[in-house]
Image 1 (cartoon, helix red, strand yellow):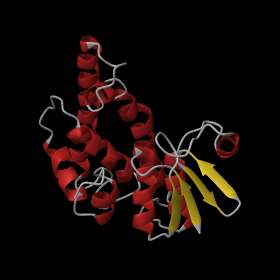
Image 2 (cartoon, helix red, strand yellow):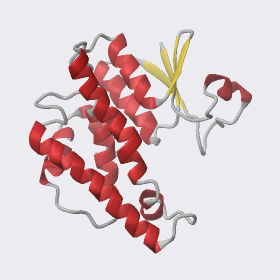
Image 3 (tube, one colour):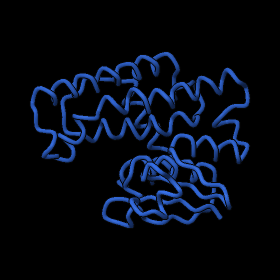
Image 4 (tube, rainbow, N blue to C red):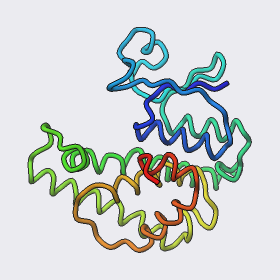
Length: 207
């Protein structure tokens, strides 16, 4: 059976949990991270030298980096609806997955801990305002894509790209800040709420 190391509140762990749900996979999860078992031990760092969650253990195969884990599991199960074997369709799916990780994720680096977590290290009002503006600018890129693509980020069908993007939309919607009206993003959010995996793992455990 698959083993997943990481606390369920982590956004990156929730990517994998949602993916497992979509795939109908059984797994055992062990809590690691702040407030739980330490990731700073030699034993954990032997699995992931970055000392971060999640870590997937599939027999004697160990994998870290949440987006890569999701890709691996979809490919392992032969789910071409989520991650196409067609190189161009797959590249577009991976493009949006990587955009989430490299661009959208970085856009909330200051604003999210300041506004959602009341971090004592993130209190500069100028940086908060700039962070909110940058985050909203990136969400407008997603809005433009959804206006073209339709129901999901790559068209009428749900793909693996919608998992990290769906979690990101939830984070944006739940953070107390000013937001522009993004009707395509809002419709997308409601559409994702029709999926059990999103309700279980995409909405911070909220019904």
